[in-house]
Amino acid sequence: MCDPTPHDSRRPDSGKRSKGSLALFLIAAATGLVNLAGAICVEADVLVSSDQFLVIALLEDDGVHAREMAADAAAPADEESVALAQAMDEAETDGEAAADSEESIRLAATDTPEPAVNERYKDGTHYRTLPVAQPTSAPPDKVEVVEVFWYGCPHCYTLEPHIQAWKADMPADAQFVRMPATLNRGWQLHARVFYTAEALGVLEEVHEELFREIHGNGNQLNTEESLVEFFGRYGVSEEQFMETFNSFAVQTRLRQSDNLVRRYRITGVPAVVVNGKYVTGADMAGGATQLFEVVNFLVEKESG
Image 1 (cartoon, rainbow, N blue to C red):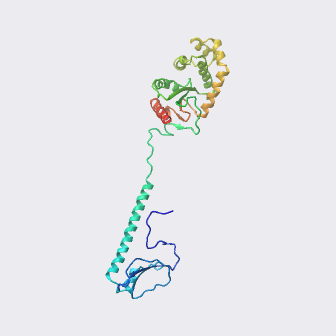
Image 2 (cartoon, rainbow, N blue to C red):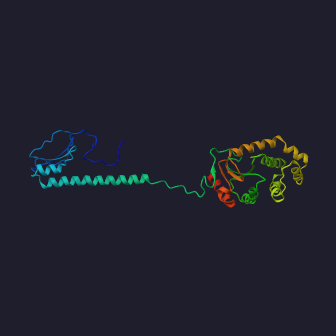
Image 3 (tube, one colour):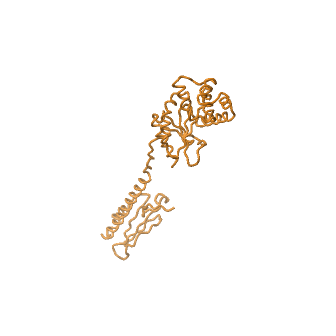
């Protein structure tokens, strides 16, 4: 591999030669019999000179520079030769400085950090990324947004108007899904109520009313009798309700919900899961309004 960085032309093998090596530079003498044409690098143990040559040598082991030897041993040297030697040294010094400058620029460019991605909402702060993405029910061109809730949760109840407002103006490529949490037996009962209403085709009618009945009227809807009475208001007979409530289809949906909620690693509600990858909530986002700003951000992130 060729290194484009310039090297010292005087000592191409600097630091690698064995002890006793000499770099000899022969410069034409003042007699003018031989013109200065350049320098020859040799390895020798003896330095030879004559009255026709000015020997400028560098003994690597001693650190003795050629010009110091020349001053003592070759007084007849003409001014032109000395000037030429000085010019060569200056050129080498300038070359080394240029090499150092180029190296500094190269290192500075290499060490310049990449600009950080400027995202308004941060993973681990406003939302968290699941270690494994979970399956969704949305078609390929849609981003699934799942609300995980419990009818008996007061925070879910206060979030419901914000859910409805967001749904009215949600991104075109988002698909909204509700999923009841099943983290304990009380929650499982209300999750079964949700899937029973869905199977009976009355979910849109009763969903908000279930919240109001529990939190507004104080009716906890935690017995079969209270549930039969409640659904009777919407034209569902006791037989219809009980048959659907205990059906295999509702039991299957309940198991599916329980499995997904656990895969989402949800330990409290309300929570929102975006495209099976990201989990957020009002507590992480900083409030109900901010929650749906984060949701929109994640929908856009997945759409892009």
